[in-house]
Length: 119
Image 1: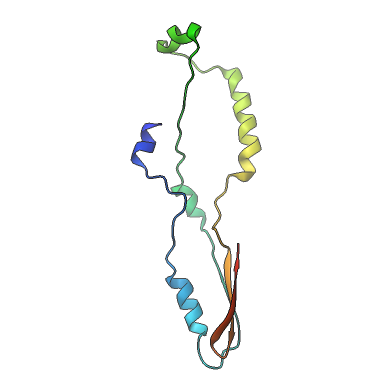
Image 2: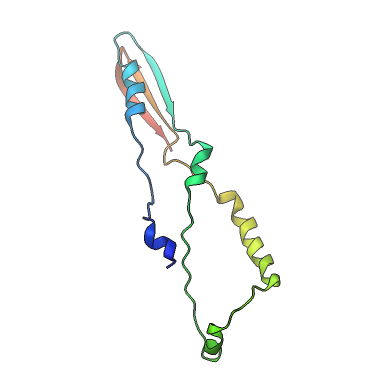
C-alpha cells in the first residue's frame, strides 16, 4: 500500500444531504396540487477536483533479479506506449455518477401516491 492510502479513508460512496429533496417534495404536498415533481441529482464539475487515486503496488521478485532491487532504474521510454494504451481503453469509463439520477413523485391533491427512482 502507498503512503497516501494510509492517510485517506477509503469511501466507496458519500451520502448526500436529503434536505433539498425533502424540501422540493414537501413544497408540492399541499391541498390542490395534483401532478408530478421531478428532482434530478446533478454532479457539478468541481467534484472531479476532489477525486484521489489510491495506488498500491505489489512487486514479485524472481531469484535472479533480487540483486537489482537496490539499483536506481530509469524509466524505459518504450514502456510508455503500453501504459498509454491502457489509458486510451479506460478513458471513456473514468467518470463519476450518482447512484440515482432523479426521484419523480406523483401527487394527488397534495399527497404522494407513487414515486419512481431513476437509476
